[in-house]
Structure formats: structure tokens, C-alpha cells
Image 1 (cartoon, rainbow, N blue to C red):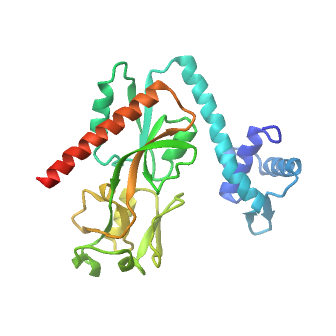
Image 2 (image 1 turned 180 degrees about the vertical axis):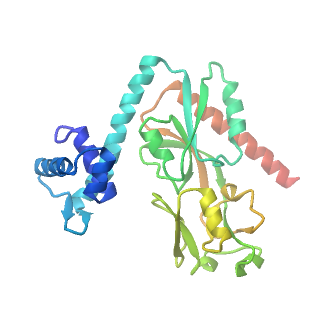
Image 3 (image 1 turned 135 degrees about the vertical axis):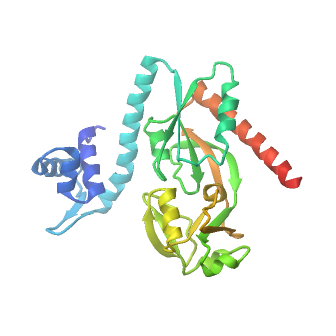
Length: 296
């Protein structure tokens, strides 16, 4: 970072995310004048204006938008390098898997059992993340691997292997007019309210759907659906078990989603490769058993 210091980038990101110098200063625990001075100094060094400021609001310029995206990745890379150095110095004793609660499609027990049978397998620590932060926790080195749902999660900077491909379903109140159907199409959802996941780049909402309440996790989303304020369009495994007040219907033309195991592109450590192999093999075995059960 020849043109900027890590601290300056942290200051910029705080203002860019808060869009308010006062709140950003509180978040950073520094004085607002010092923060404003640091941002002006960074703008001078780069030769561009990063923010448009007025007495009523702060907005990002195109240059600021560009730095926001790249800056997050840059700070993440710095954090990942520091964590990698500490792990190397301490010796690798544990692999860290991040997932959201219930976000394993009932595969996790089989994956852990398969991994435990591998010679020299490391202990696996489970971290629980939110709806949209799991990929970033791998990019920063806080976690080694993650269970992600594509195309909902952003896999930039990560490699991944697919564990499960599944249909998507609509979750709606039993009192909703569409609840009497056996199946739905995306066109049926036009004009319906669908939730907005905080921090998500792609929500999967079909054309014509209305923006519903912003949600941060599954239980909050289910509560809004039960209240009749929104419907939800989800991978099937995230909709089950279905709450008694709700109905789960297949959406026959919705793009399918994939549950994947993801890791940092540059991470070639044997403990990660071994866990990924165990995960893929275990998931294939579970899916084979489920397919035979459906045929039976």
C-alpha cells in the first residue's frame, strides 16, 4: 500500500459505510476533526475526491465507490496474512468452519464423521455466521472453510466445491390465497413482497416482486412471513422444517441453488484440502442414500 496506510483505509471504510463522519468517528473512537483531516489527507494523496459532502449528507463519489469495494478486500487480505502468520507460528491444531445455523442441509454430521476417519485429521471448530458474512470471514482468515449458498453468497476470492444442488421453494402463510396451490411459478410471485437480506448482493427475487422488510437471519424472516408482511423464496433445505403456520410450495421455474464448501483461492494447506475431500465424499454418499429412498 504505497499510496495509503492501513489506518487511513480503515478510516475511509468507516465513513463510507456509515456515510456520516460523526458516527464513523464514534465507531473508530477518535475525534471527528481528526477523522475529517485524515480523509482529506488521503484524498490529497490519491488526487481524487472520495466523498461529496454537504451540510445534510455525505455520499460516495465514483472514486469512493471503487475504493470501497477494493478497500474491503485489501484490509481483508492484510487481516488474513496476520492470522496465517499467527497460525503458522503456533502450529496448526484446528480447522475453522463457518456456517449459518441450520445452513448445512443436514450434511454436517456426515461430513464431520467422514473427516474424523481421515488419518491425521485436525479438530474442527464450528463458527456460526449471519446471512451474508461467511464468505468474508474466510477471506479475512477468521475461518478456513465455509458452507455457502450460491448464487446468494459472494464467492469472490474463494474456490469452492459443490455439495448439493436443490430446488427453491416459496414460504407463505397458510392464510395466503396462493397457499391452496400445489406448486407455483415465478410469475405467481410478481406483485408479492419478498424480504431484502441485509448486505446481500443477489436476493433471487423474481421480476415484479416488491421489496419487503429487511432481514438479517432466518428466524426474523420466518416471523415476517407469519405476520403476512412478506413471502420468502428459499433453497428447500433452508425452508424446512416448516412452521405450522406456514406452507412450503415448490417454485417450478426458479433457478436452482447450490450448497458449496468454500476456501480461500490461495489456501493450499493439506488440512483444508483433506476436509474439502471428506465433505464432497460425505455429501455424495448422503445424496445417494436420499435418492435411493425417494425411488423406494
